Image (tube, rainbow, N blue to C red; front, side):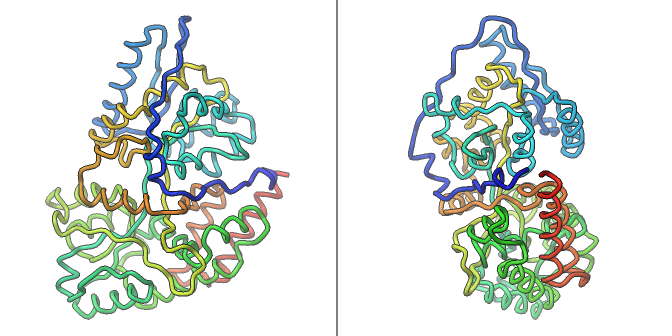
Length: 433
């Protein structure tokens, strides 16, 4: 993509702002001619797939002229197949998207339907959490809408904190380092991470870069007024090595997968894991009991970093959404309106699908105290940084994951890691011009 298309869009503004609007979307009149909507999603779990099917069935009952053809694909299979159909110029009408760099590449190639005008109709766009909606637009145009949002934070074992006589979760990076040493002194494994899968470890480096440089640093590097070798990105690597020097992770962390790490945490084998809101369910499912830590599970925000230029309320997270293929019929947009209505989002959130929901008027669907804490963290954020391995072009995102693992393995320095990311991003720009 030309540099002019690399506009940074994950804007400021509390996620809760959407809730203050209270605008209910109005469904547009549906066409009377028969129309088919091709919808691809990745909700492969039986209960989740059934929930989406029920929504489609209900819509088709109300709109008998519309046929919704659903294709359910596993995450990687979806990505591979989507690449194929995009290359052939035949995208599905409605499909899973996380926004960011991949979506922007498809938009630049003319493969997506611009739904900016649709979002402006009857205030539909105003019903969404604006930080999450921003992930699906570029250069003033929007190509998708979010249906689920989330944030990464520290999940912790209250019982192990009590065992180590730690009275409160750490609020600063210095306090986190001190907590690691205290936990080790109490014969507790401080932190578990599935660094063998790479992406869980990249959360640390990206969060630290966000704390040191904030929105301005990422925007400058992304829009080419700066670089990924600028000081905040070097500082992120240095701080991560400072943590790594304390040997805080489980013995096999460089080879461990996220399921391995989640099982260790859910079985009480480590005190802390940095992970998204889905970890509430994952750590329970991965545990031997099937219940995880239960009442011993707690959550706290990524600590502030002393001297960092980033706002300490900044969060790392993302959103699942629907993007629209270039030839998507109006019925596809209308169906997306239906799926993202407050009523249906509340139903989906209650069924465990749209957690956390992104639509105003759905707050009551969240009852778990820990998810309420996660939602509050999102609501207090002025800036949402999308995961680098999703925001950046896929090749560059892969390099980020590789070099962060390399930092932890001792095969990269903070400087060489930052340079590798910069070189990859510069090469992507050159190749697109």
